Length: 572
Ligand code: AMP
Ligand code: DBH
View 1 (cartoon, protein in one colour):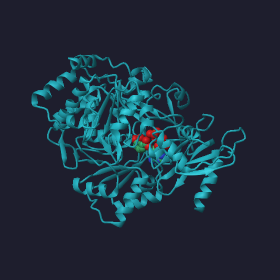
View 2 (tube, protein in one colour):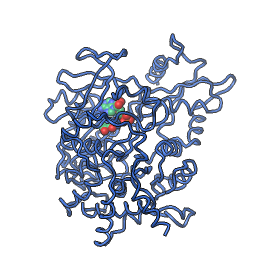
View 3 (cartoon, helix red, strand yellow):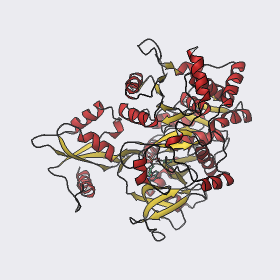
C-alpha cells in the first residue's frame, strides 16, 4: 500500500524541483538551437526504445561474460526505472551514482533517464566528503554504490552520507551482501534488479507506465561534476536537449557508427567516456559499448583483443602507460581505429610516439563537463593533429579569446577562452556566487589559456584557474586549502601543482606551521582521509616554509611557490 502511494506521487511529480537551480538559455537562442536541429525536444530516455526497435538483437553492452542486446537493455532499464518510481523517485529527483564501470552502470543510467531521475555522476574514488557535499548541493534522494570495491566498504559509506544529507532516503547497492546479512537490511538490492529479466507482459506494462509521464526536454538529464575553479565542487546540470546534442554531434564528428565497438576505460562518470561520444554516442549509432573497471594496460589490451574494440578514450597519463606497455609487449591492437586523448595537455612527442606504437589514429580532444567540446578532425593534416586540441563541434559554439581586461586578443595571440553555445549551460547548478565569477552574460569563463593555430584549431597553452590537473582529474586548490587549513599545527597553507613526469601534475601543499609546531605530509594525509576526502585529492608533497611569499598586493604568491617546488623537483 505504502509503495503504491509512493509510485503515484512519483509518477505525478511535475519535475520542477531541480529546474529552480538551472539558468535557462535566452528564448531567442533556444529558438535558434531548435531551428538548427540541435535541440530536438525529446527526453533522452525516449531514445532507449527507439534504439531497441531499430536494432533489437544487436549487442548494446558487453562486459566480461555478459552481453546485452538493445532490446534487453531497454527492458532492463525500464524494470529498474519502475523500481525507482515505486520508491518515489521520478522527475525532479536526483541520485548520486558512484558505481564502477560495468554493464550494471549502463542499465542504471538508462533507468534514471527513463524514470526522469537525474543521475549525479560521481566517481567510485569519491568518499564521504565529496558525496555529502554534492548530495547536499543537488538535494539527492538516492545513492547508488557498489558493495565493496577495491577494499572500500561503499555500503557503510553510503549510510554515513545518508546521515549527513537530509534529502537522502534510498541506498541502492550493486554488489554482494546488499540488503541483508550485515545490518544493511534497508538497502535496495540493485544487483538483483538489474539481473532480473522481466516477462514480455511486464515489459509492456513498465513501458507504458513510464511513457505516460516523461521528463521535460528542458529538465536536468544528468548532473556532471566540475573540477573547475574556486570553492567546493560545482555541479553542472545538463538538460535532455543539450546533452543529447552533445553526444549525437560528437558521434557524427568522430565517425562513430554501428560498427563501432567503444571501450569505456576511464570512469564513466566523466563527460569524456560518457558522452564525448563515449557510451551515449555509441548507443545512439547502434554500436557496442564495452566496459572495464580499470584502465590498466593488461586489462585494456585483453579486452581490446577479445571484443575487437575499435575506439577508446584516455587521458594522457593513462595513454602513456598503454603506449609503454604496448612497446614492451606485443598486444593485439589490430581492431583499434581510434584512440582519443584529452583532459590534460598531451605533448607533441607523446602524440608521435602513440601513433607509431599503437598504429591507429590518435585524436586530441579538448573538452569540459561545462559543455564545449573540441575534436581534431580526421581531415586535419598530421602536424595539426599533433600540435592542436581540435575545434568545436558546432557552428553555434561562440568563442572569444580575451586578455585580462576582457578585450579580445589579436589573432594568433593567447588569452582566456570564453564560450557559449547550444550545449554549454549558462551557469553552475544552484551556485549564484560562483556563477558571478565563472559566467558573464552567459559566457562561461573556461580558465584556460588558448590560442588559434593558423589552421583554425585551438591550442591550449596554459590556464588561469587555480586547479591541479592530476592526470586529467581536476583538484580545486581552494577546496584542499580549506581542508589543510584545519589540520592541527597549520598556520597558513597554499596548494599548488607540482610537475610530475607520470601524471603531469600532483598536488603539493605549501605550509607555514604554527610557532613551535611541525607539520608532516603524513599528518595532512591522515587528517584529510579522516575527513573522508578522495585519495586522489590528498597532497602528495609538502613544502614547509617559515613565511608565505606574497605578491605586492599582499596575496599568496603562488608563482613564487611554483618556482621553488619546480626547482626542487628538478633537483630530486
Ligand atoms: P572540467 O571542467 O572538470 O570538466 O575539466 C575541463 C578542463 O580540463 C578544461 O577546462 C581544461 O582545463 C582541461 N582540459 C581538457 N581537455 C584538455 C586538453 N586536451 N588539453 C589541455 N587541457 C584540457
Ligand atoms: O577534461 C574534461 O573534462 C574533458 C576532456 C575531454 C571532457 O569533459 C570531455 C572530453 O568531454
